[in-house]
Structures are given as C-alpha cells and as structure tokens.
Image (cartoon, rainbow, N blue to C red; front, top):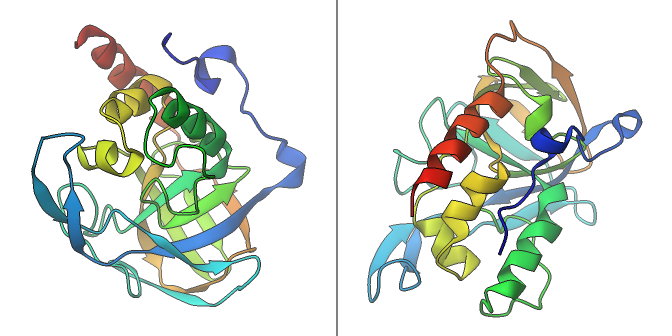
Length: 222
C-alpha cells in the first residue's frame, strides 16, 4: 500500500468548521488479558485498550471526568495511557473509515464489520475536531469540564492487536491519525452529544508538527 496522505499534507482539515465540534461517544475499558499474537507471536498482556461506549447519542448518560481520567476507566500501563498528562484520550471519528479500509486491505479479522466507538482505544470519540486543529496547551471545554491538549498519541504494539494486523502502529505514524492525550484542568460530568469549544493556548508547538517529525522517522524505519 502507498503511504497514506494526511490532512496536514494536503491542506484540508477534513471537516466543516461551521458545524462545530461535538462529542459522539464516551468510552471506558477494564484491564483484561489481550492476545498480542498479531504483534508478538503467542504472547498476552494486561491492557484496557479495548473500550466500550457508555454514553452515546442514543443513550446520553452523564460520565464523571476525574483528575486521572473517566470514572470506571482503567489503565494497565501508565507509560502509554494514564496519569495526569494522559488522563483522557481523544480520537476523531473522521479517521474511522480510513482505518476500516486498512483493515480490509490487511484481511484483518471481522474487517467487514463497522468499527465500534472506542475501537482505537479512545475515551472520547469526537467529530469536527482534528489533530490539525490543535496545539499543545489548547483547552477544550465540554460543559463544565476543561481539558488541556498535552501530546499526540505515541502508539504501542497493542494497537496492532486491537486492529488485527501487524502494521497498524506504523500506519498511525505515517497517517498522522493519532488522536491526542488530554489532562484534566477542571473535573465534572460530560455527556455524548455535547458541543466542544476549543480555546487556543499560547500556540508555540502544533500537534501537526510533532506528528510530521514522527512521520519522517517512521519513513526511515523498515
């Protein structure tokens, strides 16, 4: 497959700003045994990367956002998700069709089934808010909750396992479709369907620039 073209490279944000950003789904996961055979043959690890939706448009339950993440969401490996700077993981729904196609091309298990909310391991599935819109230090307001953009995701081998094929991690680096980690500045409750307000920070370092550096490094690796 040719290297994917990103929104950052072709100058399009991929969404209509007039519609505004909103929260499609809130997802949590429990630590369970994850078969990582697609990444390292015959091995298993404990992981909470498999998320399930607990608040969506059809069932907009209020979910508490705490300083260390969403109520009920567990973190198995704090080096990749969890702690104050990675308390919440946000992922744009706009990238879901792209991942669906990569899974079909890789003949991943159940590749023909639509990806469910939380399939990328995210806590917040959003629409109208892409990596190209964000800078480190920007604030996202969802009702009374305030979240700070800390860094784009740096995926680990567990993404290969949940996506069902071995090159998922490299594809995330090459595409720039990484999502972002958020810290919690103000706790509170949020519901799916809520609007997301973006408040710019000092705007000294863009998420796009970080992703471009990672993409260049991934191109050099086998």
